[in-house]
Image (tube, rainbow, N blue to C red):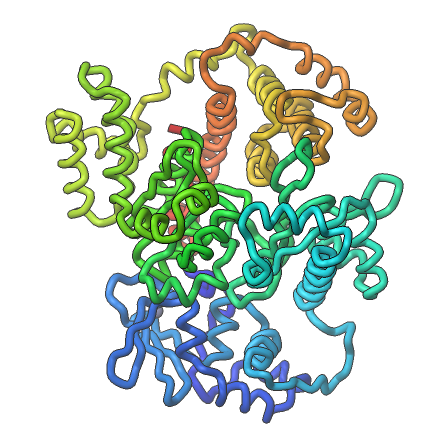
Length: 620
Ligand SMILES: [Zn+2]
């Protein structure tokens, strides 16, 4: 669903002033608003969010406010308005930003004004009245200036050399606004203080953290920083890469805030909008350096997620801008698995997806250095259809015995089932049958099973290895999660943590798992399983300390055949499934109530089903 739908539901016709608009008029002078409205280039503005094609005097595209197949969304540059014939939404450049970006009216006016170089006088002059969001943006912008300054200062020498070694010249560093966070606990804290940024604001922006005793400290230390921007180019967060060889985790982001949501943010999107429109596609890569490498190779339409897997929100965002996505992931097993998960998220949105496969063990950086820009461009341009690529990979593993054929079909079927267009779906089903030498009807039946909500039943054996030998209780599962985390803290992402927080039942082991995740983020746990027990014991709640020792010394897991990552995903996945089940039940109950708001409940149910589908394909 488009974000704009939920809030600000009242429809505004051009020339009519809404209640919200009238309320705010005291602050920004009427003629400034008029000037902004007159001068805003509405085609360019909306074109950042929606793929538009000229048609007579209008520009047409698929409406960002309702789901539609054929474009009925029109933008008229002469009158400076947009209108959708499907859902009747319409307005001007300012109201578009209000509706679509959930900005307040003054935020939208200020945002457009700053693009146009129009000064907005503050009639009230009350600085404390500025919105919370504006204050956040300002503190993040201040941090960005500090990081950039550090990179060109003497303390940034090591970081500069590192970036040079990775092939980045000054112009590229400048284009992406890269910076450096010195290896200090209070460098940024001090600079923000001097710039008179409220510590509460910087904490809420995710830039600094509050320690237990010693006041605030910098979140990013000894790292190269990558500013993450919103679609209009305002910095909303930072990604950061470790500089020291033993520094963990390798990548760390500033935390989520009212202006930064990982499940929506796409790194590089702001720069990629124009190239995306020109190329008619988006490239989704794995990381910040990949996006930069692609840009250096002349492929500016690349974006990456920010320390999380691709989400349905990302997919919908991409779908509004283009119909084609090319996935470019590392050539190793982990990269290929991530590629398949991304594919499962993109297909239901109706995107056509291709997949580049890099030579084993290479990332785009390496490939660019070894083969040059043209070779990388060719690789992307000639990328095969992503499902075809998955089928080929499955066939390589062997597909002769009936069991192997069944495995191959079960592996690919969920992806085929996710294709939204029925004709394309049946065509891919046919190809899967041919490629694996299976009866088409058998393939169709597996696909139907997946579509009706069942899993492909492939993880039955996996489930058995995970069944706890001892008491079989929930505690045992939660303990296992905590245990795996101590061995493989590298699996801990912010997203995974919030998922655990959300779905795991309350228990000391849940608290232990989350405390371990925190310890990993703080660097007290090394990826190879090394653990600073002293530091952990000092920080953990006393109740958790014996549990921690208990899981740290347990080595019963070492002889398991199933990789720990798979187990972890599976274990947490069970709780995710349970959680979704419970929510679905609750929704059904609500729907039977006499005064139920059926439309919004159905909408919620739809989102739930999508999440369910995503979690099924993510854990298979
Ligand atoms: Zn519409």
